[in-house]
Length: 156
Length: 401
Image (cartoon, rainbow over all chains, first blue to last red; front, side, top):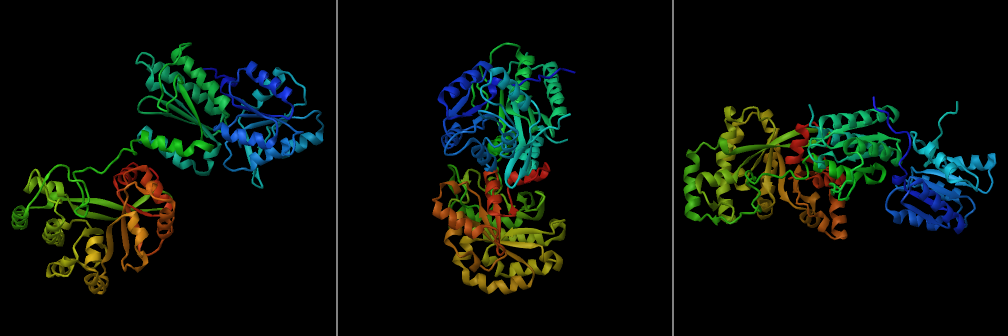
């Protein structure tokens, strides 16, 4: 039996960054490039990001989303993507990047279709490990009221 | 055992609502030089995908006829799929770069990953092409007599003297070898096609080769129409014979209205058992119907009373837009698919769709379904009765339509 790879191919990971802070977007882009990602799109607010994702033409694999954007917050944006039946990025892994994380934020994030939360700031390794953990496992989904929500693997 | 390319198409068609959860990797093994696509390498690659299959649900591996490998799995992410494909690439070519342009037009990519959530139609079209369906076409050797609009190449038109000679010789000729059948299928909810009847028709090309090689019988429509009356007689006489009719219980025949009004048809009718009459569909060309509409209406009560079904043959999509279909007293109308739907203006397409979509009487038969586009059109329009080479092929191979 051949041992199959357990790590993902970052070169083939299409990433979308939505964050109001331009400096943090640049930092995140650099982190993604360090990991090996080539195709990265970013935007400073929810509506612009949605447009950029549509123009991208392919489905994104990973969404790194800030919660503090206006007028469309990151939570609303991801919920909208998860609720749009033919959105190419409907099944992308999504990570919320709040300034601070508490259980309320986590609960809200999960109910909007996020896979997890990483409070800012974080390193490329932290972000890479978290994304790898999500993307290397079967990504299970459950549709609730038209919104596609990730089914989290049971914690042992 | 099913053709591997067809098996892939069947797999796609069976996905249904589950398709958006699937991703698919196409590994372009066929593009490699012979030394690289060894049995060992292919076996190893399939082993790798088999291991991945244990982790991701509903995984399927397809080794296509050209040795390309396709792997489909549910709930897998593209980065994970790509990682495994890169591993497979290494097992084939190590660290060498890929320089070929693959079948999807990408340069230097050994594998292509598809997301069925947004690329499903594209993948199905490609699978259909791989299975050879997109290129299946009606052989020119067997056009139906009613297909007088078929191209006649550069043949010289047959003149009156030739037609007279053929008419004289026909009654003395054994035409059974010139008769062909093509099934008309009713599409079932499970995607299977069930034969409704067989259209019995005569091959004009065989007729030409036998009686006037190098000359076209259909070039002069008026003379050909005259000849078809003679052909009707010969065909009816043949089909009235139980030995010749064989097990043809449900069939359709192309006939002229003048033939139906003649004593020759009455003889045929008298020879045919009652249970067989109920299985006979009379195909009348639209031109004949338009030109002899009064005769048609006069014959209608008799024909229906005897149990025959009536079909108006040879309509095109613009005819549907222009005609009052509900006003034609018949059981079926037969549309010829020509692939021209995409050229119509939106307004015309809407009118056609409104008239065809899921209609009850007369029922629409879509003929010349020789391309995947024709089947997609039938599906969009809710047409459940289909005829064509591609449908024959799919039913024969047990592929859901």
